[in-house]
Picture 1 (cartoon, rainbow, N blue to C red):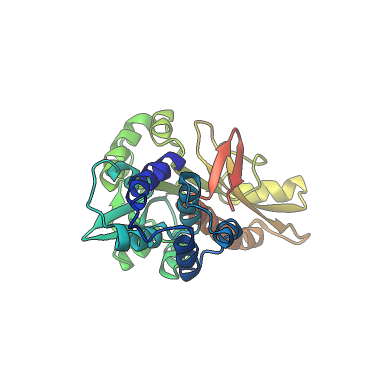
Picture 2 (picture 1 turned 90 degrees about the horizontal axis):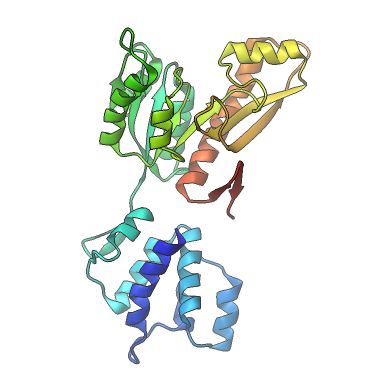
Length: 312
């Protein structure tokens, strides 16, 4: 996202170079304090009353973006410099999930599509997190391969569009996924969440949405990959594991294999059954999935090889 930020910063830097401009390092420091953005570097430069260089100006945009307040910062800049919607930075704004409408910069909500097959408790955790303001996003559609999946009812109660997409007899995974893609393309989500979706996505689909699909697995990957539901917990207990948990990971072309975003652990107790272990892990699933979506929606992770690194 740094190139997009630089392009937007450059558009306004030309405007603040005017001798009559009221924007200088003192102004940036004042606005940062008013917006609740604390930054020692900006404060120290302001104490020196140093010139507002292009590099410092660019840095202020990066910091505002990291704090989730780029829209507010831009609106304060526009109060002084003015601005007319420009095709030059329209794509940059879209990449940063911002829009300029009616003279105001606003955040575009992070759009999520959720694929389900069962009860939908993880879906409910996402719905609750959005309603509580933990995720600044919107679920644009819930898709299920099972007509009686209770997850669809959960979505309908909240007015979320639902789609039932059963597999056809003799249909290949790729053929199914191309029909699934017709729905996904119309929704245009920023992220696709597999929340108990009991189908393996085809390589074709995964390649098309590379880096935009995540899955929740009820074990600590790479252990017990390929298993699901009660089968996982039974295998964990029979193997004699002392800890288990859940994993949220990016989806790649191998089953339960992509880079790991979040993992949480629970103790495996001596008297555990698959049902009791599953119940405790499910609580961690809800926490982990919300945490992962929040990190992704705020652009607070980067992937280096198999490592998912958090950006503070």
